[in-house]
Image 1 (cartoon, rainbow, N blue to C red):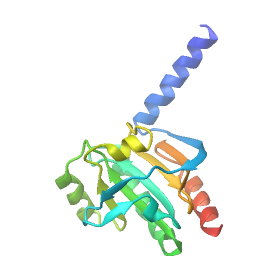
Image 2: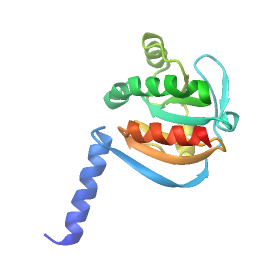
Image 3: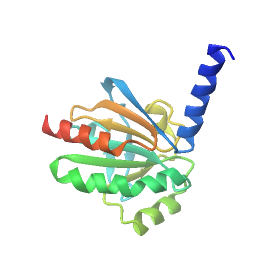
Image 4: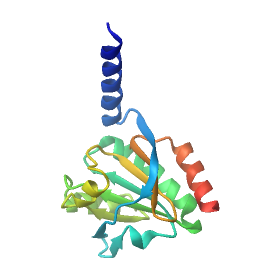
Length: 169
């Protein structure tokens, strides 16, 4: 086999594994501003990414239909509870493929303690770089800049270390 074919097969395998939630792709992004996105939480609270400045924020694109999303939700909750009192926020954005009643039921059944919104138009996913795979997460610093993007199951130890560092800055 030639080297190009091996590289292509390897890249395809990693992409498929990430899509299946088997591995996460952690990408150190070029630090850039998070997109300005506005929507209402399920509780009816108006939200915007700029309104979260001053906090370290995890924006989690997920769905009730997504098995890896459901498996990771206890870690999302644990992380929120660990850091919330120090200026950390989580915004769980259910994708447009989900149904409001399914999201609301999940939030109630699992007593999610953070802000949850439904991206029914798909505009938030588009603004964050055409998010197409769930789960996809963005860690945003206090200045509203995207520090990291995670596709698939993330390394929670790494996330906790980054949050700790950012909260201390």
